Length: 320
Length: 316
Image (cartoon, rainbow over all chains, first blue to last red; front, side, top):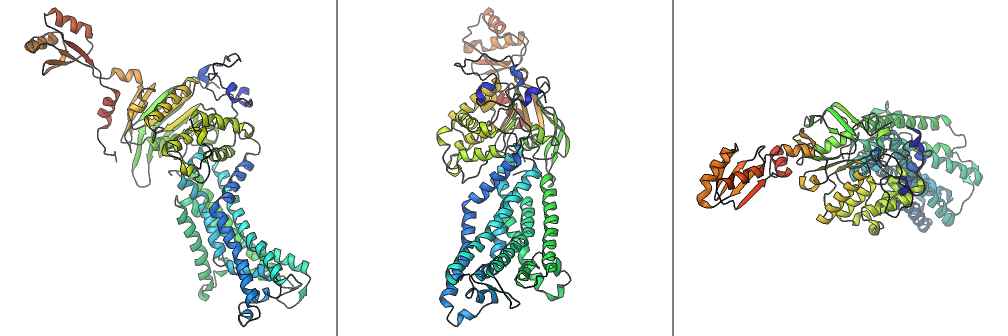
């Protein structure tokens, strides 16, 4: 590039494009040869902060989309409805039934967060994440906007990274929506108290809050592997619904395989095997080995499917 | 770096065979000189769009080389595509955003665009395509013509050295088609090289300096528009009184014209290199009443149809 190429365009782009002088232009016509084209004074190297702008544009798209907002609002309804049901049935026979977390919510509102996440984890959260990540690339491909992004040109690796940030953020927002509504509803309906751990010990509320925050973080972390799977499927097709469905199927199949005793040899590597290990954080002595195993399995899924998505997307013919 | 002498686009043996085995593009040598308005013609399915996708690095060639603005594609796509504006196979935007929001998003994703000049560039691009008033409407509510205009505005967000416009007049009414032609002329006047594809020759014939004609994956004709005109088979048609037709026939044959024939009261022949004035002079000199003399140059449309076949059959 010659020095002229790095000259930034002034605030009046019209005056910077030779050959486009309007009749009333007072500036003398530049001596630049017309054949050099109007674009030679423009700067074409990536600007500082361009990746940040790409990511922000992606986040605006993901979080500003009505469908996604409805999904998150729907997830937020789960703790609200669960809380109300428990509130009105807590003194009846029904109130004492159900899994531990759910029954405990009436004793301590903090457990409404755990109970709601527990209810959403098998299906509603995977579904939401599948919609967000499956749509990431396939949605742009089906709308045809993918080719125009690549023609800007957005580097394919950077675009995939921005899409991953968008899908991960959406997953985090989904988990946080459940947790936030659960905390507020639980606090209002049942009050927040010192926490009785699974081992029977009572710890102060502040410690309990920290542990619940840990549970929320662990569940968010547990979903990163599924985000990577969804992103990979999203690079394979121009039909977003196909990528979404395939992603849901992966999580369901993983859960089914995890329930078959004969396959116990592969259980530790399954995507969903460690999802419910968040309970470990509610014991007095947290076994960090169990938590670590959950983190490692997700990291492995993220690396394998992230790499597959990258390999596919950077080589793919864009025919949509 | 002098972009003036090197061609804007060169391909050598460019070929694309899809995994289905279908050969969409079959060894074409495209040559688009800098500053040209290159009309890229061919029926639907002749391989124009696949070629354009390979030029822009969206699709990898099976064989052959592509050079755009002096750099190899798709290897140099990230360096080359900045000064290239494109409209490929129709416009595409997020349906739930307004026209303007879509352009804002596009500009935010452009790694080399200056956010400080964004609004001015947006206004100018929207104004150029006549979409200023409708910019606040959701893309979903746009008519086909408005969508096409927004696509053009997207290609014009930054000053370009090369514009690749694939079927830019699709969905436009005759007025819109004229506006696109005017826009292409204006951009060419500013020094932008334009490659414009169409399956309708009449739409772009008037603005092109160069033409390339695709048929069934091959480039069957390419060159300057003026030189292509020389290939046309020009005919002459002389009208005389009915009883003079025979005499006129022998006069034309005597002048050395070929394929002399009679159509009613008229005599028709291939003109070849003979001056039409010599034809009229010879007829009058022979004492015939020359009631009319027409020189019939086939339109490029006829040349086009001759090369690519006629009818609605898609090539494959």
